[in-house]
Image (cartoon, rainbow, N blue to C red; front, side, top):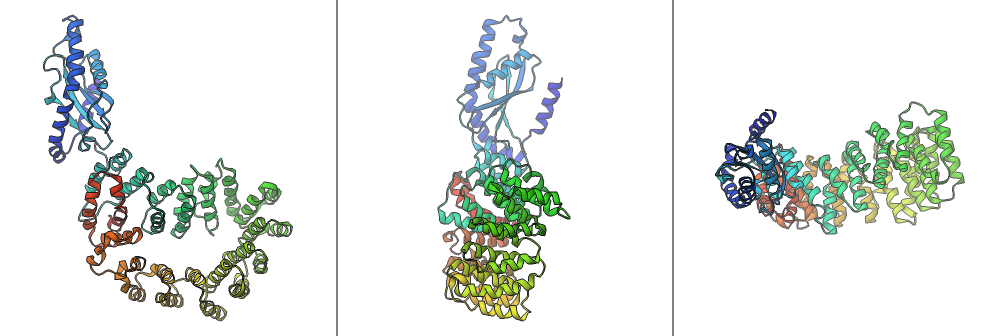
Length: 599
């Protein structure tokens, strides 16, 4: 009785929508006819024949009224994965024999993808009888399990079934707009399933990395994608670009890396700890602090010190005691990230004793994080250090310093850093110093000293130095915006691109639009990229679309989707219809672009 009740419930829920049934009926009939000889072989010509020859006519198994309905589950390749009774005959022996027979089916033809259910299986229902006709195909049917589009898409792509996944995605389409959750699921699982092993040339991967800075890409795509990156430099570049998204994305990235990579966990954790507010202190304390990797576990402990209202003397002495041998640098980092001024005297003493430039640079970085006025003075003095690495650390430290008397210290520091811009023998030091000056003076351009150095340093002509300063200019400030707009007319195309990238944060500003709008038909794709959002007609976007490289094509697709997503869907249809991941991979920019109009 229990089995009968469950069978009825199963049959009730496993129903196929009427329209879908009509469209698949012909395909079902053809496939069932193909496997009928296999069923006849294992049932009619084996089970029934042997029952007639070996069992007495009076045996319960030979009762002519016996009839059992069996569900046969096939993989997309045609292998029987399971079988179950959905309508019992009332005779356990007969039912079990029918199951064994169906489980014994082999070498079945590959089923058409139209017959695959959302769980990645083909569900065939076949009625087997003791009396003739024993296994009539007319009583067989295919039933369908239907999930939500997101779950269905995930299952299909996990099984490598591109066509059915695309079909379910398209079922969510309304006037060129797709369901955001379904589209995200499709992109995410497509990348996870096919990239790798699908590969891109190095320059295309760089473009993909750049595109992932795009603010509209959700964490649900970015985090799994980051895990699939094999190249460590590519991962670090992605993490750096994601910093502008706020702590939430980095926190999700940190949680993900804890599952598989010590090196990546440590890199993301340090980026979080550099922030005044880490954004996920509990996550770092609980999961980072419980990590099996000692480097991650140790550094995570700094959050507890930072969160404490005051530094306990026992904690202070404990970390000072650890600062030796192989634990020296980890302990120095914890002291810095704790942001407790009580560690300053020890760090200053350690600096005086250190001879290794790596250790010195770590101490300088730690000092810069402490809210302690003498720390700022020390950083100014270190700008004259003979070691390049220490000078770089001092420049970065003055920018990061937020302790008492910050403005007074940075005023003096700006003067010394301008000397570095003019005369330091190391080009990277000159770049860093120029960018640091722009960052510091931009905090208050009303101050006369800041205004003076703002104009002075921006007269530099070295393209590398200019690019570094552009990346530090805050476009929200009127003076900085005017300077960035002026750079758009520079003869050096790299400077133009750097300025346009910075101004992209002010897309709605009429001055920025007026300066960038003429690039809409520029022959240089890198420049045209920044003007795509100002297109007044769809034709301006679709023109030469297929010839665009990955990054401009993605932005172009995003802008097209905002106007008419159906154009992108029509372009993607033949790529998905081929069933070849390599074909649809060329359409990845269009898939990402559709996020611009997803609902």
